[in-house]
Amino acid sequence: MEDKMVKTISLVVPCFNEEETLPLFYKALQQVKPALRGAVLEYWFVNDGSRDNTLAELRQLQQKDPQQVHYISFSRNFGKEAALYAGLQATTGDYVAVMDADLQDPPEQLTEMLAGIEDEGYDVVGTRRVNREGEPAIRSFFSNAFYWFINKISSTPIQSGVRDFRLMTRQVVDAILAMPEYNRFSKGIFSWVGFKTKYLSYQNRDRVAGSTSWSFWKLFSYSLDGIVDFSDAPLVLASFIGIASFIVALLAMIFIIVRKMIFGDPVMGWASLASIVLMIGGLQLFCLGIVGKYIGNIYLEAKHRPIYIIKEKK
Image 1 (cartoon, rainbow, N blue to C red):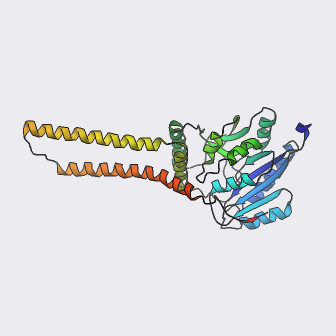
Image 2 (image 1 turned 60 degrees about the vertical axis):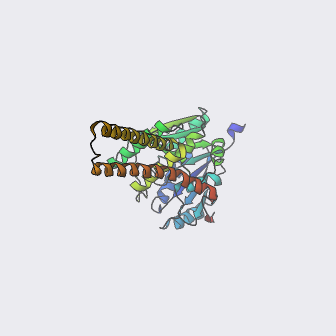
Image 3 (image 1 turned 90 degrees about the vertical axis):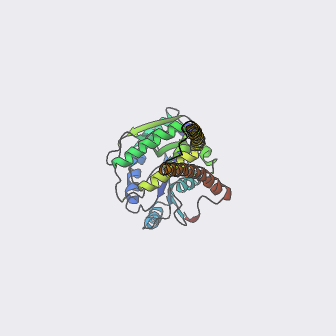
């Protein structure tokens, strides 16, 4: 009898300056709704400090469909990771989906995701892009390089091209919410909690409206956070650099002493010496930067500040 009970799918949708896409997103999801085996859709939009009329659009949607549409509005911009966490905390559905409002995540795949959970026994059905058409070549290169690098140094595997767009059971969501860390990298967290997971492939899609807020620098900073959050390999690298520098300096010192004893030549090459000193100093600063990044994350965790602050919720 339980299998025949009406299920609820909660949709978590982070929003930052998405006033143009929200009506299109809601319309697209309503069109998919009849194919979701009678499941009830519960929308949880999270306004992440948008500077346009996103909040006004959310208010209109909520008034139009007060039973299913809910929204959370932050006091300022806290970032997508905070928005995802806030949305997951607010959900009450049997299943929870994470989606972007720009419709780069194909809504029609929700039907296949639901089948994967209910018919095939998966706990998570996620998505991954099989190509990056329409994306700048330099961004695609660094994205692929990031996935290659993090999978080399981290014990938590993260597939290339994986999106946040996924459908999860309540058990999986509860496991994710049990990790209230301040520095969050959701792709890593989704993978770290485990559970039986399946990925659906799809072709890259362009935004239906508006423009992305993810600049190259933001993506680069986000990738650094992912590396630091899920690997201590950079700290090991810093240690190896220090040991290698010491060994090279020791060998150089022995060479200079032996040459002086055998040939009696004065030690020459002040320009090269200055270059070596600058190089070693640069390596030391690089290693300090690595250590500083980890210490900075510890500092943020130790302050126990809230991940987000809600200004309005309905």
